[in-house]
Structures are given as structure tokens and as C-alpha cells.
Image 1: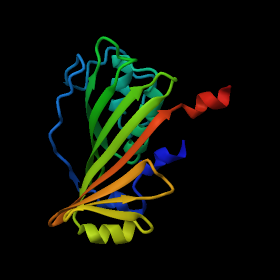
Image 2 (image 1 turned 135 degrees about the vertical axis):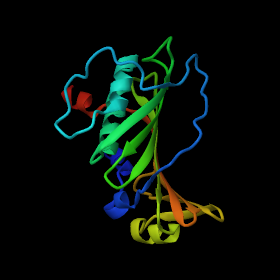
Image 3 (image 1 turned 90 degrees about the vertical axis):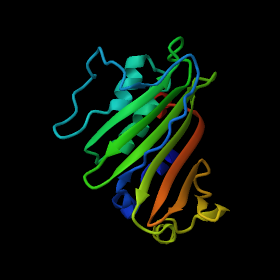
Length: 206
């Protein structure tokens, strides 16, 4: 599913991330409560290569019992962690039905010279797929107008507020990039939403 790659920053965008975005996480009541990095009674399936940080999001989803949406969670998490130096995660899930209910997460991801927040929601559907909403949130020490000119050429701009502009690309209708003026920098939110996502590896094996 190629559109999932839209969450990867283009060109020098990754180098613009310099500060982890801190914010309020809404309490979501689904018979669950938030827990930082839930207990991991079982070891990871495979140890990461030397110097590669553990994928805490995939580990957490696995250990709380998520199965149907795990391939989507793991794929998006691996894309986000590419080149990172560390990460940790806050998760919420339905204790009564971990594989059939929604899964919510907020990850902090560190890079050598930057940090970002990564929010992911995965909801299994009746057809065997998953609805996915993912956001990469970061701050860059540049004006939003400069970032738009250098990184978002060809995107359509929709100004919702004087300091809040959403950019879309017709080639990827599920993705948006939002730039929010936060002098002296710019808050960047890369968002991707997709319904009925299915694991392409399973489709090829049929």
C-alpha cells in the first residue's frame, strides 16, 4: 500500500525536526486507561541489530494482544523509526477485546539532532482490514512559508486560520500536511488516514 509512505518526510524535512512536540493526550474511554510502555512479559521476536533502537510501539501492540492491525502498526512504526536513536510509547486499548477494539498510541521518537511525536490509531473493521489514522508532529526553526516553498511544491494550500494552513496532494487523498505558525518556528503535522487497509503480503500469498 504505497500511500503509507506519505508519512515519511521528504528531502531535508527530517533535518528540520528539532523539538519534540509536547501536548495533551485526551483520555479515551473504551473500558481502558493509559499506560506507559505496558508490561512486556515476552521477549521480542527478534533482537534489533546493534545500534538500532527497539520498536516499542510494535512491541506494545503485540504484548497487549493486537493481531489484526499489527502489520499496519508495525509498518508505520518502522517507517517512523528509520534513522532514529530512541523511542518510547504511551498506549490505550480495550482490555476486554484487544484485537477487536481500537488501539491508540502516542510515541516520542528521538533522532540525532531532532525529535518528534507520532500518534497512531488503528481500528479493525468487519471486512478483515483496519482503519488507520497516523500523525507525525514536529517543530522546525523556520518560517512556515519557507517550509511550504521548499517542501510542498505542487500541494494545494487551504488556509483555515491566519496561522493555520493545510496542504493536500491530489495524488494521495488520504494525506495532509498542516503548517501552524509558531514564531520563531513552525509546527508541522503530517497526517495520513486510510480505511480498510489490508496487509499486502497476505494478498500476494493467496
